[in-house]
Image: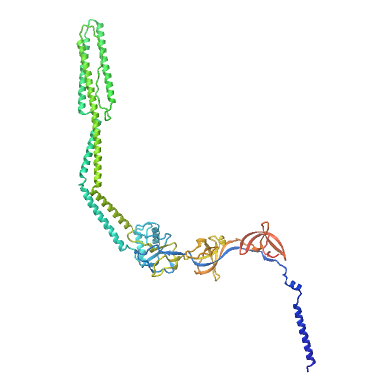
Length: 624
């Protein structure tokens, strides 16, 4: 049987359990209004941010890869060595540093030198070669200490310097091959043979048996022409022949004799008239009449002589020179009768002698004129004959020259000499052309000109024992570069020369500069940037601790303020209907006022502002 104390305890416990269960149920039970009130959103509050004063820096962030800069694929410009056999690599390029004058690789046991220069190797540099590539080679030889000239001509001094460069590396400069030497000797022999043939044909031609008669004919024709010209010149200068001159001299003598007889007759007549008469008046009249007769005869003779001399001087000979004419006097054709004096002296006989003497003089003058005309006509005829003789002699000379020229051109000996001379010229030209490139040369594949040296061999494509085809290696500069890409919109903000920061995974940073954007930033053989992006290339300022092939983060500074400025979040700036920018400043809990501001640089979600703001004030970002 249970005790009363235990029963009471049980009852109390039951009551407590029932009360607790009722309280729990009552606490969980809510009315619909209570449930709606509990689920309603709390009252909205303002989200604000403090106004800060600091420097604002705008950056473009990109991911990039750290590599060696300026990659350049290397290919050989042609064959290595003098043969045309298969080009096979006997020593491949080695990765690492490459200095000027070093042997990049070997092909068929021949070296491939690396030299600095902007002009690519494109031909065999042979003796006598000229150009910018030769001048570039000479500069490289001087840098290597081989004392080469700077003429731009691959001459003996340059060949000696090239030979020393090869010997220093344990190689021999490319000498003419056996085939080239045989060709050179064959060309020299051909020149000697052609010269011998020319000498033989010239000797046969010099004998001149086939053209000797024509030479004699031409010589005689030239002599005849010379004689004809001399005779013509003499005839033109002399005027009359000796026979004509003798005839004219005889005619002149006859004229002088007739004139003397006339003068004697007239003198005798005057003497007879001058004898005294019984009538002085009659004697005076006779003397006046005789004197007038003498003066008229003399005046008419002098006038006629003057007119004849002037007319003869105005008539040139056929050769252009006036023939000399002796002077003569013509008696008047008719003279008035001498007044017969009424003196007692008989003068009729004397007057008859005067008339006969005057007639003889006129006949002598006519005979002289006739002789002169005959001499002139004979002179003209002789000049015409001499000119014809000169023309005939000229024709003979031209004919002889043409015959001799044709004979020389058509004669077998002349043709043989011409052919032999052409053979000599052709053989000498071929020898000279070949000799210009004969001797020590540099095959196009034995030198590689690189823009910058020293450089690094970054990638090797040629393999030992494999044929050399296309790219043999890729060289880079010793400096590092960062490659990456950015979206096209951000690329518009980038300019070469902008400062940047390169950050490694370890957190270490390096200063850098933007080198190129877009196509100029591409690398040979590199991957193309994603669609809508553009490639960028940056150059770090240092290299300590950097390692190629490492991913980095780059921040390119596209803008920054020079001094600390007021900065607010971009979301705090509101543009009103009037186009002006404003911010809402919270001056008390949930109480704001609008403040007009001017915006500046934007970076990392913040914007530079100026206006009636103070550092530390809070501006509304959202809410309200």
